[in-house]
Image (tube, rainbow, N blue to C red; front, top):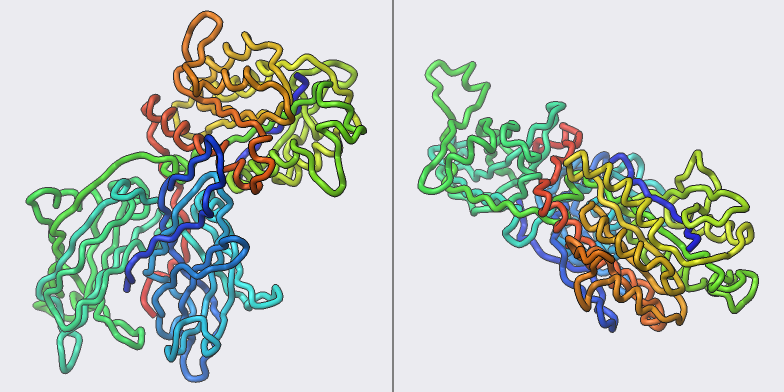
Length: 567
């Protein structure tokens, strides 16, 4: 089968109650489609250089999170209001359900709250908004974008940063329970109102807020509520990474009084597991210098620590595993002359053909994680492995739109031929995946999308190639275009039995998903993507679990250290 293919390389890569939010629409009817929550993602938000809308004080910002559902923006959650601060770091953690097989659109809106009514009403000043997808955030782990006012106008130099961490029920968490004893009293007529902040110190000495507890009113020996944070968020997978813990006396105007601080590591915290307790002296460096008899400003005690380590698809993605996406398009003669309106490759200016529909449906999901590329064919020869952009020296395409344009432009330049050989393209991608496997790291996983209209000619070689590929970091998606007999494709899928090579060797794991496009002709474009991509996360985890390759530690980001302290 003359197949053109493009390989995609990913780019370089006080707390309120948490609320879960889902962006999924109701799944469309399909014999195979299932819409289960893959994981939950925590989103942490901070802003810089917000517009000042107040006359006497600075703005009191709050962030609203909206999700797009059936073309409408729906508010699902909002942060706390931070008083008089143009560079806020919000303690509120937004939680969203994550689906790899969907385009999940988010919108963040920042308001200066005046407190008389709900945030976002006409009484509040709009400070700017930003739109992105969940996929973009988890693939990059940290997204910083400018804020825009109405009509696409920049909100001055205002920016918003969203950082993602994964949670999966109780998996991937560390659960911590803190209390303090005999803290300094910072109030004149009552006792301090203490809260605790934990910061991760990154390699460049900058600090990232990990968690901010609730405020305990009028209490010098507070017991804070237990809380959970991801291991990535707490220490970037490094148990010896330094953590800075700060105790403050809350002030309603935002000018919190510093009580003291201490430094620790996750390695040291783990001594609190079981019946043990770990405690630290809470120190005020200024008092230590000025006061001769100064001992400490209180003691902070870690009452309990529980760890849950279970690796998931997002653990690998957020750990830097890149999804390398390859698309192969069937250019055999059985598709019909592209110049004829009856051809499956006919380019109708008013209606995309089935190849384009399938390509866009799947590609819109994967482009959040990848860039796209293509390879050049050998002119005047029959090729079972050639490309669509005719540029062997620069094979990258710009997103899914680049692949679509290359496909449309190559059709007038090629002659459709036969037979339908699938093994060569599987073998080509498998060779690259084999090179990656030798690194013994969870660094790249390969997905091959095959769009084809007919019966496989080299069935024996294809079965052999799939069995070999099942031992590699690789998955295969096949979409059948047109009304041909796809019995062979269903055999390759293996849903009705274990696929074996001609010699009887079984696949190590099921890596093939076949779907006939005709089953989705009357469904929305997203239904096909949900169906064919639903198994990919499980296949990724199965492979790395079999190989016992843990996720790589993500590279620590470089937040602006000036965001760390209360204003």
